[in-house]
Length: 362
Image (cartoon, rainbow, N blue to C red):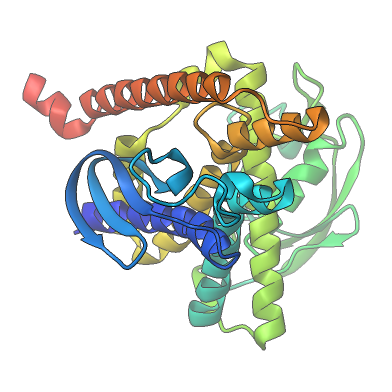
């Protein structure tokens, strides 16, 4: 059931992405003759008044087809409602609409999560010291910090029940190597004032030698109103969007070290199934994260992706005329073959790494 839930998430995100292209075209009166989920042989199709809707065998994405690329179309080449005959801005809207749809959908997922289930937070304020490293010379041990202590504030910043409190404390510690940090610490019924001096590691980042955890159990608090719901959703969306962009930048700059971490549909489904198995509510952030990743991937200026088509439109805007159709077709077809080849390779690699597959080999 959990695997089906994860597969459904991917299918929904593909539909959302292609629906963005489809609606952006139809709302502008642009002809659309195909709406397809997947590639390859058709498993199911429905012929509408002007558009063929289909599900295909290879679930590696989808596409929206236009009569411009259909040699059997009976629409005249000079029809003003063909995509190729529209101004550049109209075409940019259609090409970029899939990315925009995925980003909006990710935000709405967070709105639904916070609106329906509330905000997850700790039952008590502060950050708990879950453990100390065994080194007695570590900064925390030298400061008199003990396992089970609760840090209520650090460097003048008070920690509430937010799950981000751990990150905030960690940021303070890492930003103050060899500098004293004043702590308000709760130990049982006592409140202590301690000073810790983080020790810099090899990269100069401050460390104190502790494990951190939320204080108490995790509980859900209903949001106070729609504005808080939308604000929390915006904060979560921004945080994940920034982290995703940074992740792609790191992948490009450290490709040799991180290439093996690139995951395909099989790995994504496996991870989604594990998250759903732990807690079905995990499907909300999982869906939003994958939707944001799908948007960022598609905006990359690579052939066969939305970013590649936007690059062609940019060149057309600079030149005052499009590149020759033959060049565009060759580049896009080559990119599509490479993209499908990479997709098949990643699927095979991820499949062989599945636990059930490894068990069969043993």
